[in-house]
Length: 264
Image (cartoon, rainbow, N blue to C red; front, side, top):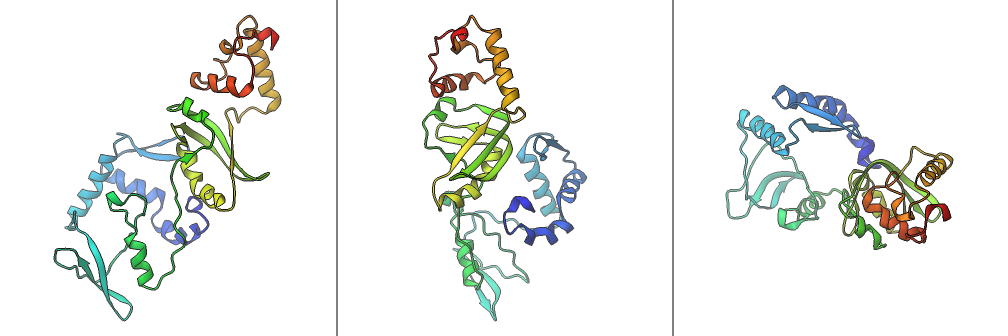
């Protein structure tokens, strides 16, 4: 439940009944084999989201569930604090013994994420916390990430600071985009970063070699410099850095790219 934020404990009872193991068993019993990748992430062996959807739709049809698409719910009726009817735009209203409300998000109205669910929850008397972006990429103030767009980094560490205080740190995969950063660890941290930004500026520190401390990294650089001592600085970093990052690192270092390594 840690991945669900401060209120994750609320989900513990539900996850104890139907957690990761039960979810994997559900799909594999229905013929969809799974695999575990870096970061303990579980995917279908086919790498096709459509196959996951297919299993779920088949399960619904097996239990004779009716699937309604292009159906807009405009509201509900309630009696004694209980929902008794769903109001359907231009169609027959829905009456059931029980209702499950999945609020969805508010980020993409064209896909139906209009935030109506939160309005209905409030109308039922529940409190709703301030809505914030979550599972989103980050726009970066600096311009240089654009030069590395499309570059995927594995086994890196990103640490979040506010002032001089460390706020969060994640290890895994990150992706440079034309506007900043994305990828699994960025998406995981985006909610907490959004909350921090309401209080002030935030600094991200990217560690490309988290397995190496300063001493080991220094020895690695010295070894490469010795190996390429007759080459120009710009041609000496290919063993250490991804090709797309080399021009960026050179610019940030302030070292003349044509300077011979033996003179650095």
